[in-house]
Image (cartoon, rainbow, N blue to C red; front, side, top):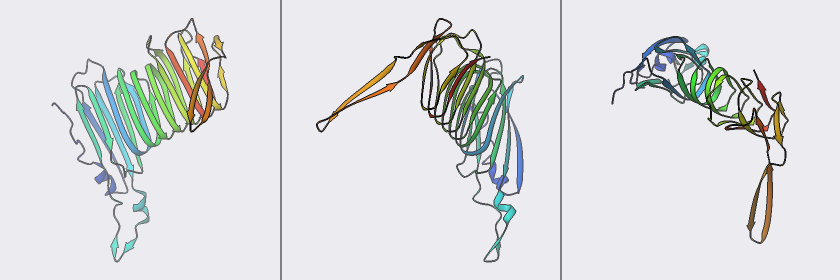
Length: 266
């Protein structure tokens, strides 16, 4: 197995925990600079993860961390605290796939990552905000407690956020590729090129749906679930709004519980 960067920083955040503030700038060569690549980021805590496309042939990662506990250095039985457990950042590259993983106890960390324009992204963050811009590929983004903002996107997106807003702006879309924008507590705002063809499927339980597309709406679409248990017969109707844009195309799903949905053209 070819891995050009394995444990590249050797738990780099140990050095972050050893100083009040530290920053590292990593340059990751990719196996085939002339072919599309993919970035995978998996993190529990990060103030921000910022991914941007640029005209280059390597992946650049700026890691910025600060251990706030060091600012309040105190004595414990005559010993001065110099870290709060330490953490790590692991970077690997194999066959144009760059993977970035942070240890779960990095509670004050910023990642700024530059990738070539033709890079797909897969970002999973539990606590913190995600920003992605100017990349073209297949994108899968998941934020548990944080906002997702994507700008200048090309390709397709599957996005989930439990506690946070979703905002995506497309420059181009992949033909015939289905997409999904799924939230729980937050608004969803997505804009597409005016000539995008798709079938929209939309639902919000405590909010409204807005669009400036000329969308042919079918307001009768619904799904019915029937159950019978211990002599109790139950029917639940989940009502969706569906509509076609520019004659229809792949399904784009927009769903949130507490929030509004906006679908607009650029």
